[in-house]
Image (cartoon, rainbow, N blue to C red; front, top):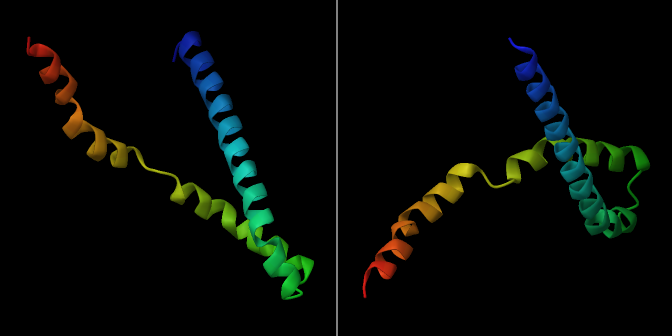
Length: 88
């Protein structure tokens, strides 16, 4: 493995986990403010609230749109702009 490959891999991994952590944090903050009234209304203990949010972290990554969703939606429309411009 060359020095350049190691450097690029390290930079990519650092940026990937930084972005992943940022999105997970934003997701948890939004989820907290959506659920806080329900927790307070039902007088849930702090340990139960912490357990709920810690268990939401792995599931949040599964709810993000997958690349295959975009491919199925956008690829059938890809030839359309080219065909409309080819007419005089």
